[in-house]
Image 1 (cartoon, rainbow, N blue to C red):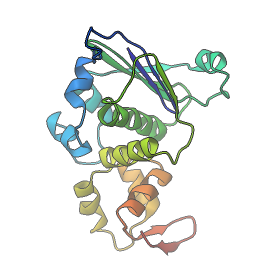
Image 2 (image 1 turned 90 degrees about the vertical axis):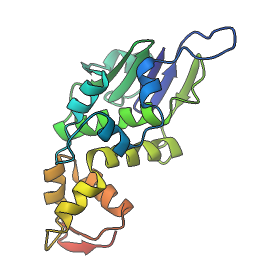
Image 3 (image 1 turned 90 degrees about the horizontal axis):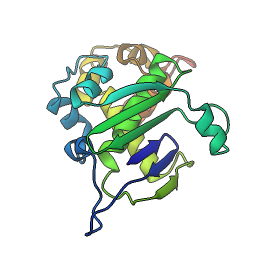
Image 4 (image 1 turned 180 degrees about the vertical axis):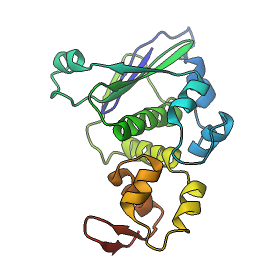
Length: 205
């Protein structure tokens, strides 16, 4: 069994005589796929906002709204510090998200957990605990980039971006149903100029 937590990762499971993991079937199916391949494979429209809940449903993943307060107490972590997790077993995969979040935060959390399932399921060890508290770690950075690609596909973004005289950060964020910080990170990653509405200045990507 694998238990990923946004900021933490727990892995539990059994190995066969060769020491191979009894990998979840769904993790096997989605492991190694890019964000675009995931959207294409599971027939998700690229018209924004991306239907992330339809995507996980088509994959066969169950979404669970979850209160992590007991887990935070047990792990001696600050209140509301755990906002998402992915729990896998042989034939099922569940993505859990915290109860007190905005719609945009829920969407990104789901995309972020899905990113870990696609990117980081090939090097898991049994009875392994990994703390991922550094937001600048390679794993977290890769998962954030993947989540951005999933929620803000390049072709969808450029189709709208090229129609705007002033590519407004808040307008683009609203269209794709993501936070301005997520949209800003995506635009910067793609090195695209945009107008930061909070300062009304043109930002270089």
